[in-house]
Image (cartoon, rainbow, N blue to C red):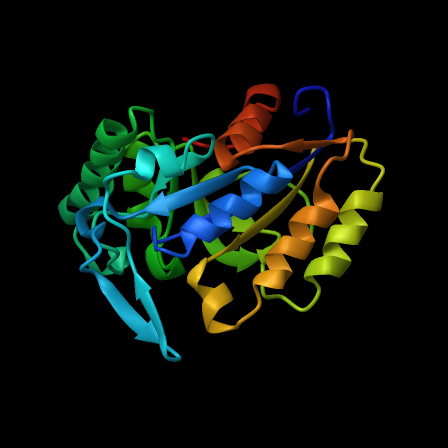
Length: 236
C-alpha cells in the first residue's frame, strides 16, 4: 500500500528542458509529484534543438535544485546516447557518472533511471543493477495499472499524448482497488509547446487531484515503496 492507500499517481518527464518550469508549476498547483530525468553531462542552456519550429533548450544547472524541490531527480544517462551500442565500461560511465553528478548537485540519492530513446539490452540492464538503480523506465505502455515484477524494464501506463489518457484517468479514479495500483504517465514537457496542448496536462492534474483514496508520489516513492511490501518485485 501507499501510506495506507491502494492507488497511486506518478509522473516521469525527461531531458531537463526549459518547458519543465511551466510543468513544475502545474504539478505544484495540483499537488502532483514527478520524477525528472536529467543528463548531467549536457545539462546546459547551450544544448538544444528545434522541433516543429519550437526552440527547445536544456536548462543550466544553476537553480535546478530549487526548481525541482519536492520532486524526484533520476538519471537519464550522462550524454543521452543509445546505450545498447556501447561496451559495458562505457555504459557504466554513462550511468554512474550521471548518478554521482546528480547526487552532488541535488544532495539526494539517485535510485531511478529513464532509458535514453527508450532503448536498452541485457548489458544495459545488468549495468543499471550494478550501479544500484532501483528502477528504470522504458517507453512502453501497458494502458493498465499493475506494477510489473521487473522494475528495471519498467513500462508506464501511457504517454500523456495518448488518445485514451482521460479515459484511463476516469477508469483509475473509479477503480475500487483491492491491491496496489499505479497510474503512471510519462513524456517530455517540450511536447506541450510542440503540440500546443498544455491544457492536456492541466486538465489531467485537475481531474486527478485532491482525492482521499489516491497517493501522489514520485516514481521512487511509489515503486520502491511497493517493493518494500512485495518481495516478488525484482530490482536486482
